[in-house]
Length: 517
Image (cartoon, helix red, strand yellow):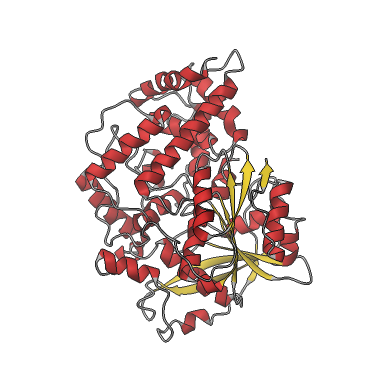
């Protein structure tokens, strides 16, 4: 969700689709264990030698998206790679076979999150790229990362009723309903209880998923990996490159997470991007006399705060009786920051607030969360929170409080205006220390050229992060002028041509190459 202390705002194409107890050793040992691929002779041969039994399946696609012919399978991986004879996890797979007679191989896809399923994303990509050279030359393969979607065990922390009541997925916005020690301890217990135990919670980080992806590469019969990841998928791709550089054929990284910035610094970077996007939306609105934010863009943030802050104590009316709370209204507007095409809906929702109605913003918020009309939530954002307990830096209450204050300073449109006494990291009682480490994917040797695609007006993963990722990997950068999160599935001819040339012919765009949405 938009307030995730961790980067829940980086959900890539999956978010856009919605909108339209085994303990490890100490932290140093855990991080080192996470960074090293398993050595030969560790009992992993029975996993790498799998041949997934693909059978026809019928993926669920958004309304209006044409059907695709797909096949599904499951892949077994060790829950803990240091104990390959122990408990196993099953990874859900979906493949759309290449249309042409001369396929290059498999193109593995990840939509972002973390916590969003890759199976449906692969089917969506196949529909969007129906006439692209990519679907002619590649089998498109999506997988639900461990703990996500149809993979087993699956991460789950709350009931649908708890989600409707505002179950916390992060410490932000601090000052409204802050976690207590007892609540963060209970969060661990209920996530473990619903997800298959503390051992599961200890092994769902990005480094675990990168290992799974290498098992998948081998199971697909690929000598080297071709991969396209959006948003959080850029972190996954970069970590795979760090761990298995000689197994990389091609990496497309779209809407990049910055590998050089730790949790606090990157969250402030993201908050700054969100505020800039809000201001650009307000400036666009200000050209109309009936703009609910007024005709002076410089005052738009204060006008927005004045409209929203009363919702803290008096939610706006909605037809289903749930009402629209402050944090839900900010989520609804934040959802529109993913794409300029969503700005009119957010402006309409803000206009409704003047009449005390919250219908449109609640619908935007529900779409962001994936809530169905029947009140059912996917577990994606709960998985985001849980996975990031292993990926993000673990904060003390003092650090978490400082990060909240820095967020609101950088993104005042989202500030509830209440004093922050003490914010707590929801992961503070997690059974293991984080395993990703910062910075990551630096100093990689033997890595072929990679392609980072970065949109200049991307609020969720600001352009600076794309520049840093390309430099860190020593790869190519395609700059895309526009106002949305990611460009891989935007249907832009310039982007499509550059990505296809890279993935098919391994031909990178020229230095300084640019496209425009």
